[in-house]
Length: 99
Image (cartoon, rainbow, N blue to C red):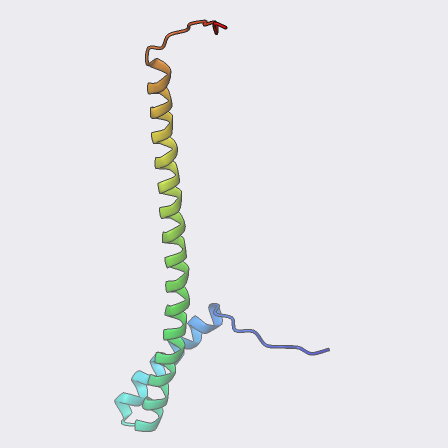
């Protein structure tokens, strides 16, 4: 059986970002350049991936809500047009075709 690791962003990722941020602040304060550099790039890469995934989710939500809003507006306008057509005067007439 092959077990494959999948990319997951969860509570552990957020916790690790917080810990690495404090490591970055401490190492920058102490003057440890290599540790500060590594922690800064970890924050940039992992935080960027997290922000990118959240951004994609928000864009999909906004687009779906806009589609729902447009559909509701179309339904509303068709109801008003249908009511106008019902209330309009019409002639009920019978006719015969002459031969």
